[in-house]
Length: 139
Ligand SMILES: [Cu+2]
Image 1 (tube, rainbow, N blue to C red):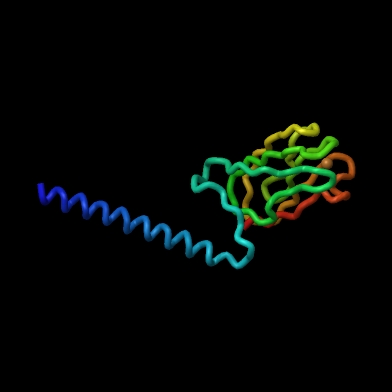
Image 2 (cartoon, rainbow, N blue to C red):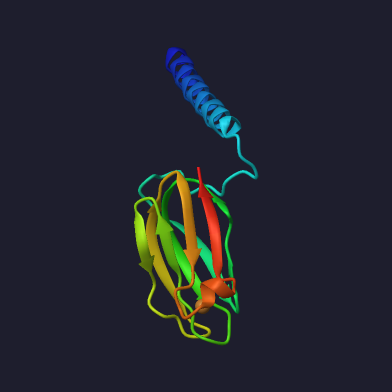
């Protein structure tokens, strides 16, 4: 019984050691990123889309301008008074867009972002030129 208890303690010690190593590795990777502010990070699972709200008004898009690579589910919320939509253009994403979103409604756009520069904009009328355009750095 005593041997079993020691074994269990040793196994717990090993698990704690591995976790500490993983945390150190993650921290090291974040510290190596030269840009600031720190990117908004997706969930740990590489396959699950990270939900992120993009607020649309006249004439602005509100979202972080620095994101970590990974799959995202952008929830485009129309908080304005007229119709808008969310479109994304960049590496691996060729002008993907939600349908037109009515005032008070929302639509989800699923895209996977890779390191590089992206343009988030509203493709309705001249809304992008009016200010509904955001450059987002992924990395
Ligand atoms: Cu718009």
